[in-house]
Image (cartoon, rainbow, N blue to C red; front, side, top):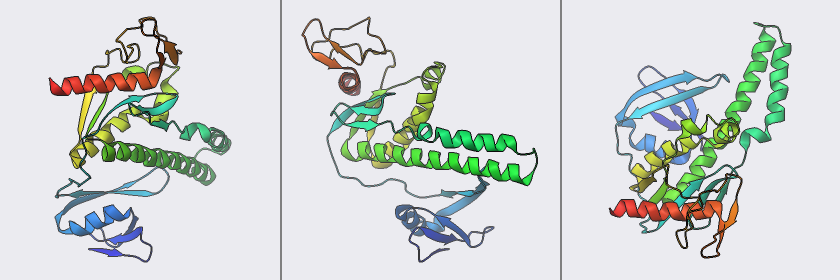
Length: 260
C-alpha cells in the first residue's frame, strides 16, 4: 500500500516484510508505483555510507513512456572542457561538481585524520564526508538526467562515439575530468532511456577520426593534437571548431551506419 503525505515528495510504503517506510521520490515515480503497486515483486533496502537508506523496488510492469514524435537526428561529442556538444550547436557544460567542493572535502578529510580511530567523533566526521560525497553524486545524477532527457525528448536518433572509457581512465592527466562527469554512467542512462521512449542510439567506431576530419570537404588533419581546440582546413579554408565538427561528423557517420 502507498499512502501520500502532505509533502508531495514524501510517501509511505508497506510491503510484506517492510511496514510504513517513509521515502522520497519525484511525482512521476510515485504515480508509477501507485499505478503498478499490485505488480511489486521485491524491495531491497540498502544502508548508504552516509547513514541514509536506499530502497530499490522491482516491478513487473510496462516501462515504456510516450513522448512527442520527431524525425530529428543529432550527433553528440563528449568532451572534457564541455560535457556534451551536439551537431545542432548546443553545448552542455561540464559543471565540475566535485572540483567546486574540493576545499570542503579536503577540510572534512583533515577532520577525520585528527580523530581517534574507532571513536564516535571519527565516525561522525566520516558520516559528514560521506554526506558531502552523496550531495555531489546526487547533483551529478540530476544533471545527467537533465541532459539525457533533453536529447531524448528532441531527437529520434542519437549518434555518439563508442568510447573506450576504461582505456581513457588510464590517462592520468584526464582521469579526474572523466570521472567528474562519468561517461560510462551517461551511456548507461542514455541506453535505457532510449528503450523507454522508443528512440535509437547509434554508436560510431571509436577509431573513426571525427575530430580530425573536416566536415565541409573531408580533409583529414592527421597531426591534430588534443590541445588544438580550433584549426583551419588547408583545403577549403574553413575554420573548424574541434568539438562541434566532431559532433557533425559523428552524426553523418551514424546515419550512414543506420542506413547500411
